[in-house]
Amino acid sequence: MSILRHWPSVRARVGRELGLVLALAVVAGGVLGFLALADLVVGGETVAFDTQVLMAFRQAGDAAVPLGAPWLPTVMRDITALGGTAVLSLIVLFTVVYLVLVRRPAAAAFVAGAVLSGAGLSQVLKAFFDRARPDLVPNAPIELSASFPSGHSMLAAVTYLTLGVLLARIETDRRVRVFFPFVAVVLTVLVGVSRVYIGVHWPTDVLGGWLIGAAWAMACWGVVLWLQRGRPALAADG
Image 1 (cartoon, rainbow, N blue to C red):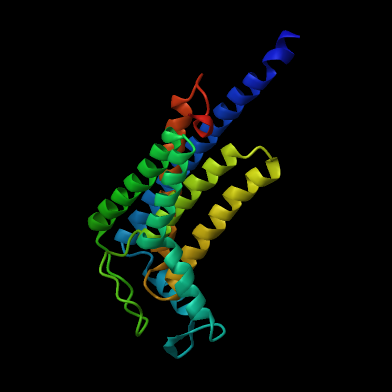
Image 2 (image 1 turned 45 degrees about the vertical axis):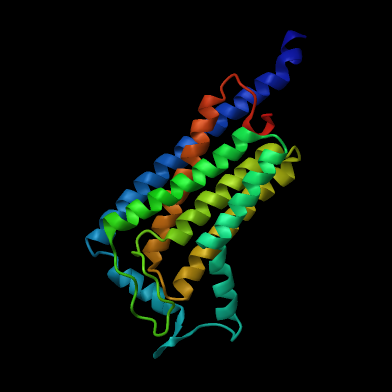
């Protein structure tokens, strides 16, 4: 009877511990993968791969013409905006305001802190590697920042994965809990692919952004899960 009485709290604790282990695994894999990829990029060993994949999105013999239906370039530009500073800032702002209004200040602070710190890390990494943007696609949008890692891909991963996990922790229906992280991953992937499609990033820029972005999002969640040991869940703070 004692075990049954305490079962909900035991299950919640086990869930937090498993979540912490999973977060640490993603962090370790993401950081190690990013460092290995960065080493290849700096050494110039990805040039052939990057060029081949980037040009695979263009018509043979005319790099100015992308593959696909005439409407696809417009769709890709719309999708790439989902990883832009303006759109992500609005999403984060509205999310933070909502969490404050429903009296979840810790969750609001977590979302703001995770995304803002991720944006800062993105700028530091870009300045450190200072990789040139692709120059293979005529009439590609002009981007002034460095290329590696892709800021759109990284911040999409940080923002959408952070929100996806937060929503999953709030939701009680298991099917819906899986749905939120799934949507977060799909949006992150689409933003990254769009960056290569419109010709403003090398494929390894996007891969690097995904790796370090996912690692950063999960690192932030790992810290929260560690701090929450024996305390109420972040999603239920008041």
